[in-house]
Amino acid sequence: MPLLGVVVLSAAIASLSLGAVDVPLREVGAVVTGRLGLSWLGEPADQAVAVVWNIRMPRLLLGVTVGAGLAACGVALQGLLRNDLADPHLLGIGPGAAIGAAIGAGAGGIPGAIAGGVAAGVLTSFILRRFRRRLSIDPTRIILSGVALGAALSAWVGFIVTASDRSVVPPMEFWLLGSLSGATWRAFGTTAVMVGAGLLALLMMRRLLDLLVTGDQQARHLGVDVELVSTVLLIVVGAVVGATVGAVGVVAFVGLLVPFLIRRLVGPRHGHLLAGAALAGAGLVLVSDLVARLSLEPVEIPVGLVTSAVGGPVFLWLLARRRDV
Image (cartoon, rainbow, N blue to C red; front, side, top):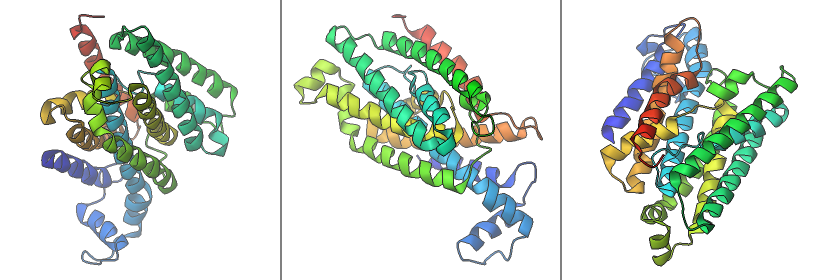
């Protein structure tokens, strides 16, 4: 955990300093301390204030929030389905949130995205309940059903965006690959409230997740209402994913890659997993955003393109490992 904290802090400092306009670390420190009411490092230049505080700081904080939320949701879904292939976007929750955001873009995309994410979570809960009624739950089959659902929902996002006013609705690549370039303090505030509440709810349900991993039948014997817990978890995940999609678009594979790696570092207990994944997810999005900003400077590539370039091969590798596909 301390190592993850160092990675996130280092990525945050680099994110504030590096870019199309490089800002010396002393100036970065002067801007931050000045905003905290301190003047240890003197008065920063006006350009440094405009770049660091007005542009890069909300982008940094929004990236941390999005990464932490998506990674924690990945932990919850993988625990619920007992499958390391589970990911909010592969299950169709992300595309569902994108539909809600695209429809409600004129009134601000985040509320619509939250509604779409919750609706997709409820639909996923319905699909999961149908599998349970057959008494033959196949987590991999559920994942593949989610992939098909996500592909269909992504197509509907394309229809909605194409038919909408381009001056109001972001372009298609925003919904498919995501971007932190439009981050604002307002977007960060709204997203942080929803993600923070969702993370708190998931932490409160960590022991239930520990029991669900043992299997539905065993969890019922231990007093867990499996259907109710599953539905609540998917609604929470849908709300968190919706908030992130409404703010930055779809940033895929964070919820797949981070839990897979963190589980091997901190063990299977979900209290540790959720905390570790939140830190690692924040670090992954910050590093990916740095790569997106600096690799083809002055052109900025979508941050989701970087996470997909890493997460896609990992997903294929995990899929190839499974004998039940």
